[in-house]
Amino acid sequence: MRASSEQQATTVLQTPRLWLRRFSAADSAAFAAMNADAEVMAHFPAVLNREQSDALLARIDAHWQREGFGLCALECRHSGALLGFCGLLKVAQALPCAPAVEIGWRLVRSAWGQGLAYEAAHAVLSWAFTELALTELVSFTSVSNQRSQRLMQRLGMQRDSGGDFLHPALPAEHALAPHVLYRLSRAQWLSCGGTSG
Image 1 (cartoon, rainbow, N blue to C red):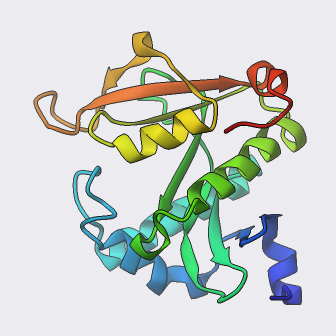
Image 2 (image 1 turned 30 degrees about the horizontal axis):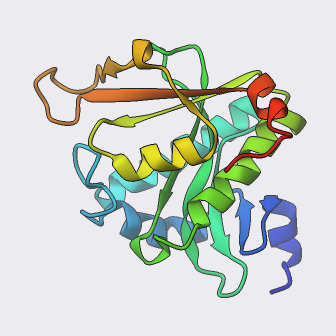
């Protein structure tokens, strides 16, 4: 599918199957539906209602305005459907791994199991270490989220077991509080020829 002029203006990256672009107001309904899916949000404390989802979109836009990078909408190049997000986010100062930049992702269930998260994240790594010249990325998730941990490993990220932490936004006894931390430096990425997986 050919990109429209508006789409070209907001596209950050493209892969064989995806446009990675800035979010727009037109994405809000599909974004909210993803964030209301209990299976998609299984490793988060709760699903988001529409107001919470729209507030998250506003924070994503504010991050872009402030930092010049952020989380990208994943648009299917064939259908135009919103499939989720993947991109970069400055880590909240309350987290033990701060200051750092995180690579993160979230996909709708219909996009699972097709290698799309890897395809998007691989492009984001290249963007981070070449165009943005970042020196390191981190990624973290709850101990129970094996799917995301496998993707981190496939991307060449290394577990920093000494950096594992209890998420400060959750009670220490909460099942999702224990988090694992992965890291990837620009030097490590370049040593693999700027590729992973």
